[in-house]
Image (cartoon, helix red, strand yellow):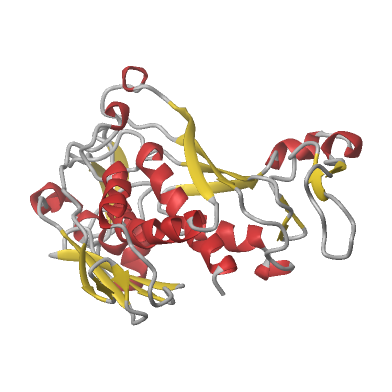
Length: 321
């Protein structure tokens, strides 16, 4: 599947165009909406979510009829119903430290309200496409789950500040033999998809950076064979498995039939109330900035849903080509 995300955080709508969903694919609208509801702002997330509330209701404008994909391009939108551009009146020429405001200024000559296309809100359209991919994968026995492995509780965050977190995302039931070498490998494709999520600054697979501290005899996953009830086409019986999964289900860019395990490091939310040093780009003079808008105290909780969506899109592309 190919996707194109469009819109901006404070535009009338955001959405996604999806090409490559096979004709006749059933799309459960209620299940898709439930997936989006997990990511939607204002849904708590342990007190870490923004107080901005948006229903994030999916509207299919083309490509889906009566819950079935037509084979044509799917276009789906979400209406932005609760924008407050006045919250950003003091940052029109003063970039927020840690945010993509300065990147936008370098490329576009302006700082968009609410972060524009760089906003974390743009993960909502990603979750539309990823939610469809999750349903497609489920038909092949593949499930994807996520867990926030690190992220401070609200009481532990100083008033006006934010915190980062680590999200572990796992695909179970994905078959062996998919992927390739180099930039066509599963790790390469998954990493590219994960880094497309705002605030992701690190990705590792399996034991990741811990492998650098191990001996080869510790890091290697010993092979084994499962024989009960299994027979190969050439008369041999059995299925190869790994006794451990330090590799995270991928060797040489190719899936090996074990759970595919990735961890994503999310940086703290850049928009914080605490006063920070910046520069007024209109006058090129030092400036102070304090962001008064509605922002997550920890983006990892809602980012976990986006991580599931990103992994689903990559894996669905492998098994549905």
